[in-house]
Image (tube, rainbow, N blue to C red; front, side):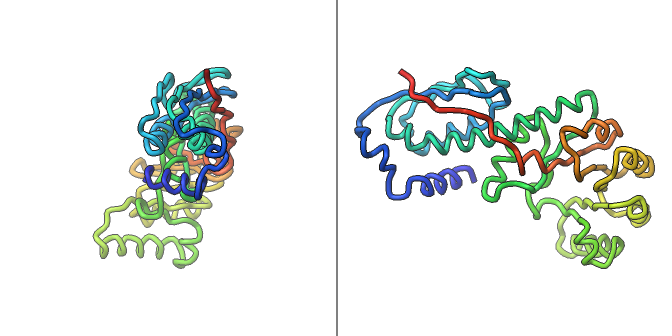
Length: 277
């Protein structure tokens, strides 16, 4: 998946040639560059950068001083790359785009975890990701200390409000899902979303699911709901939870909190690739 992404991204950027570089840099020119940190955060995407350089020009030499997940400060140098000046310039933007995006996600994830330090709640990402680079963004969440929710529509069943409404209610949705899994001989976990205590009580009465997502509950209502849920169910809170209000949710003892903002509206970490002499 990574190699395919890199090849497509290079083709998108280079087209029929990096003419800025070809116009003024000789093919045999050699150079060196450093990845410079311009903003404090968690660095992520070093392994991606390594693979980009390997595919662009295997003869490029990379000397790495940090590892994915390290805290970096303004002025830190993450790595030096040396070799063909043309290759360094042609790969520059793809390396930066990936690392800035991934480092921003890892940094934000880490900041959220710092806010709920001491709680046993795990922070999850969602499918609110950039099409085509979901694997990079979820990778960055892991680097920042978070956990991945399902990767896509295929590796876990999640019965959300629209599924329930289209299926004709909670009972129909659960029963049809269990039959589907039985008929197709699949063993996927089932998560169901509830929007009220009444829906929660209905789910508990019917049973047959693995995790209950409590959507748009206040911390007070969430605590009340958790007292009703048997230990056999996993519990997850979601909906409107941000770094600014997550602590009261985590203090309820809910097992998971999913936050779409980890990936859908993150700011990239400021990094720069500068020629080094």
